[in-house]
Image 1 (cartoon, helix red, strand yellow):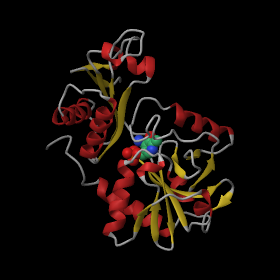
Image 2 (image 1 turned 135 degrees about the horizontal axis):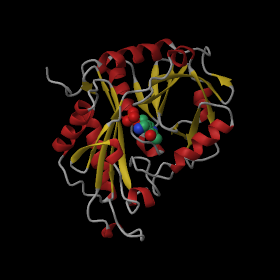
Image 3 (image 1 turned 45 degrees about the vertical axis):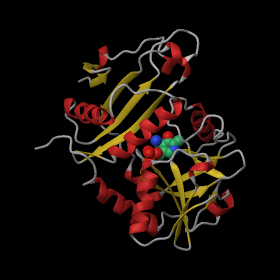
Image 4 (image 1 turned 120 degrees about the vertical axis):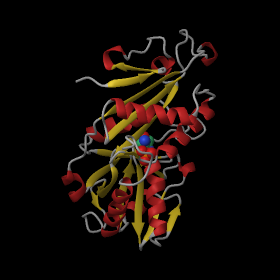
Length: 293
Ligand code: PMP
């Protein structure tokens, strides 16, 4: 059975959820999005995702014509219409329909759509064994050019990196920034643990400031674990005790190898698992309810 999609104020069957070929989201990647998850009838960290969406819009000078409260209802109602209590949700706002020039002033009305689909979980085995990373040749976008903090529809930087990782036979790639410091993976943030300290690159390293990243940092602090946001090079990963990636789809996933070097024991670390377990507990209770009864 097809999905029901929210598109510009209406809930329509997916066959009718079509966007103009003159939409600047398509023509120029001029737009923004969020990937959100629902667990156990809760939309996890919905407020945080909406804050990031509206901040991305603000930075791009894109006026979202509905309020944050209305957008929250769009997300919840899209889940309800598809009878989903666990879902992967894609919320997109584009500059809208314009002419063939790139000037956003010729796009009067943004296009808004929301898709809620059943979630494709990664196999347990990947979490139990841990995954392998390779450093890719493509560098992360410059903060002063296409700022990675804006979750824009232009993902070519990440796509190049993903393609290069695949060509090198690895499931995921590590992007360095222009100065050679570690930034992030193609769709996930990176953490290392060294001598009991949780370390991750700061926003100015050229990263998307992940909602999962922030949640993991908060969990760690609540457990009394020291957390540092600081620049580091690949050497710090090669010599770390533990390493993992975070993202909405992956949650937190252990990394056991970078560029062919084993990290720590070469197996998922104990502290990583402790954080993953605490994260999974939080997904049971955090966020607004989809169905009220
Ligand atoms: N970095 C990039 C480039 C991403 O696309 C994502 C996924 N949205 C993340 C990090 C992780 O962010 P989040 O935890 O908010 O999903």
